[in-house]
Image 1 (cartoon, rainbow, N blue to C red):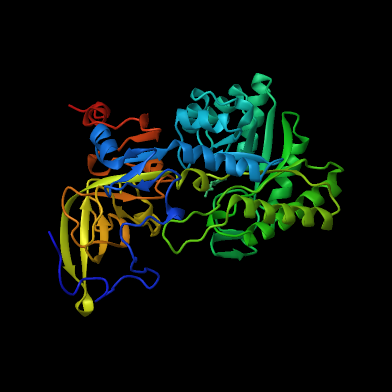
Image 2 (cartoon, helix red, strand yellow; image 1 turned 30 degrees about the vertical axis):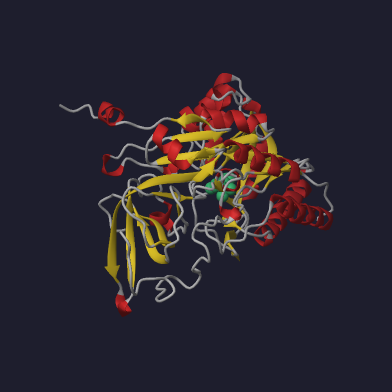
Length: 464
Ligand SMILES: Cc1ncc(COP(=O)(O)O)c(C=O)c1O
């Protein structure tokens, strides 16, 4: 199908202001794509030396394709830039046994936030001492699994939890290594951060109302706990270090006050994750090297101003490692032109996945981009919306993107930067089986998570 007329991008751009008409629809903006992605001379997109079309022929559609070389490279990038700090890969972004193994092979520690993630990490061979256990409402069973496995640290989040840990330790003669999660009164998102006095959210102990100090003192004097230090996480998709500066100032002031009150120097500070990635061409995230430079300066400065030794520092990047490493491949099923106000038009491109495999656009209006992957096209750009197959108007995968006007059923559309909080947040809405995650390296495909089948879904339905 060739779409002609007023919808052509050069004639009528009804997209958002930030969206530029690409000079070349076949070009790949390197900051959006993983290390080994190319457009081959025949126009087909390839990753790890394997064409997207070959990967789909072997593994079906839709498909999450993970570039192993890229994952390892980004993990090493953080490890090397933050040498001397502990780097915990945040498994909540995406976790499987193989990922847990790669994380350990590349010298990173692992942060988990449920008993399920902990089970995967342990099954993947992660040294329990290198695991941090998170969660604002860890069950007794989850805490018991963490303590029995000997995880390196539990990040405590409430006085109720501290009581549960003490009971478990006292009953079983265990000792828990803990950090106290505090809310530093900073909310960071992309370019903006807000420093506030009150914290209206479920995580952590407030520094400003004194709860954080109460929790620290309680853990410190508990016979069942070894208190390692303070943990703070300020937000997500953060592009610079301004928010971390405020968080470091407030957490290190708390550590200095704790030291004044008890005579004990808390040895560790974890500043959490949240480092941003490029989802569209207008995003310009910082590199691990520049983040590390900024954060090191901030910590050194704050330590000096509170006259304290620099703590052993930790960070927890998730998205910034696995996000750009994975792309989502979909097959186009239908294309439909829709009239917009003001006489412009938009082409709705429906694919064989949707909000069940990537809820982020529907959940918090996350932006993505997309390209045609099974061929090049010399046709003009047309404003498109890539949508899924669910019974929901908000079932959008890419809200605004320019694709070639000859896009047609059977084409393959690929969404870059789809590795974090997409397949990991997937659901079975409309009883769609969830797509697989398959790694590629040197033309070899290796499934990390297999495709779900209707039989898998039917096994859960135990009714008559
Ligand atoms: C405590 C904590 N650490 C790390 C992360 C990872 O964040 P990101 O994937 O944005 O780096 C999160 C994300 O929610 C988090 O809550």
